[in-house]
Length: 74
Image (cartoon, rainbow, N blue to C red; front, side):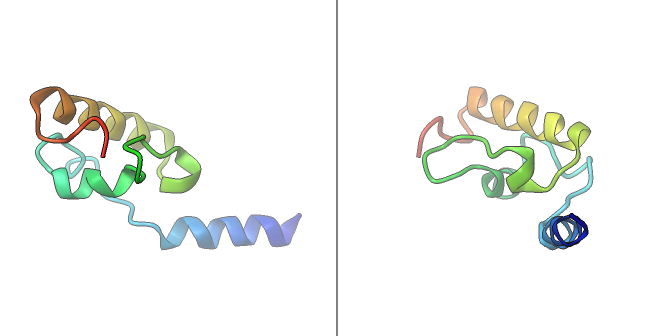
């Protein structure tokens, strides 16, 4: 159990963890890192973000898609 927790912590530390100010709809390059090859938004386990940043990131992606800055499917 302890080995699994240590591995999970290491995995989360390796991911890019942006500030909340960077997670806006204009930063399309950063938001593109959180989308998989089919255009779906990755979950928290893949992104390594906490719950608040994950919600902010999802809102920014949906707003960028609505404005035509990002495609709905890739």
